[in-house]
Amino acid sequence: MRLKGGDVSIFSNVLDELQVLVANKIPYEIIPGVTASLGAAAYAGIPLTARGYATSVRFLTYYKSDIVTDKHWQDLAQTNDTLVFYMSSGTLKNVVDKLIQFGVHKDVHVAVAEQATTCYQRIHECNIYDYKTKLEGKKFASPSLVIIGKVVALHQQFKWLKNSEHDQQYFVSVGEGIQDINELNKPIKHVI
Image (cartoon, rainbow, N blue to C red):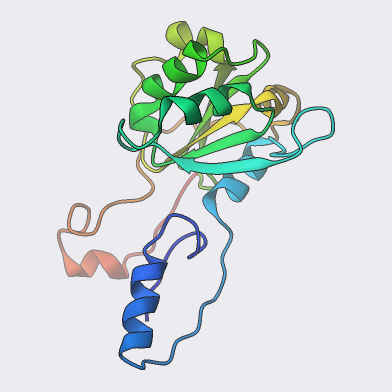
């Protein structure tokens, strides 16, 4: 059994795994999940689509700078679609710079959802043209998801969950966080 957070069909290795399973005639079942972008947006009070704002959503990743062409950046900058970037908080400055370079609309906002849907969730939001003064250089806790579009401005009106006051990491990498196997048996308590 393999357990994956979110949905197995969005930015995962499901294709590689399916190919191995089929090649080796291993039976399998896929149980769909809720992808991070849907959970993060809902917990942030950001509708990914909304009449008059965006009629579609694009799921993207930009974890390294050579995977998106300038022609594609131009298309992204001119769209009214909501853009959701997975695994891209570390390259967010480049994302914003490229969108601005290609003339992104003045009413587009950017949000970074840190540790979304957990008790340590924090949403950082601003107009994309204010990014340099409000968010540039900030180190975001992992996992973080980036949402860009006109709908992001709705966060201020519809946020229903306060940002966490705790500066802690909810998700700990295996091997980093558990030094003693007995710690696995201790109850976990989170204070919101």
